[in-house]
Image 1 (spheres, rainbow, N blue to C red):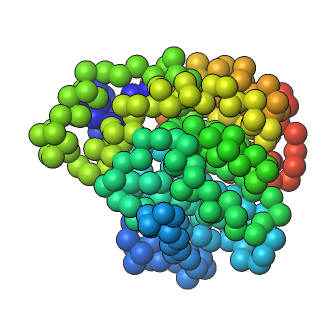
Image 2: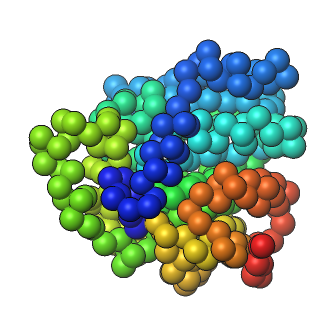
Length: 287
């Protein structure tokens, strides 16, 4: 996987994504408009302050959909999902800031996927009838780790362009260059945090290998077959590992890494299908 500090044609797009999906509370309220009332929530774990934004149903026991962003990123990568009227009428929607990003202990990387899952686990305890996790890019292995460590609280996974295969994680020279103190000093904060969690990612994914049997949540994998950042081969790996969970692949033909935004309807419909308890068995192709 090639995230962060990429000297290729992807760099302008990544700069756009990492910078455009960053919103203040005031900007968010204006963006959502009068028909949506976002709730900005904080909680503490071991002295670390975590942050998420919530819309949708409020009543206790309502279904819950939790969105987990990639690297770099923030909760607002899912702002259109939080605003979507169909999703808001079906579930309580929660978009988190992962550790080190947004307002969740900003600037302090957390390379351990196990620890990231632990820090995000309190959102799973929001009283709900059914909890679906949606993760994009590096958010993919984070939600898988959450399903491994908290299987009783996770009823479905939607992995969007997820980087889950350790064999696909090859560090490039620029990842190592960006680890030098002087380079870290001049990098934008979010990009430094991103690089610090990418450097050990292959080892983190290796550590997860014997734990895949603990994933029992039905899983939908949405992935572009022309993803130049997280290869499509990640899909076959995930399907092979999900021996105790039903899985379906939504192959997006000519889709790139940014299908989270360009094919939003596929991700939304995948989450709603799992919310309804539909079996994900089978294989689909999306154009």
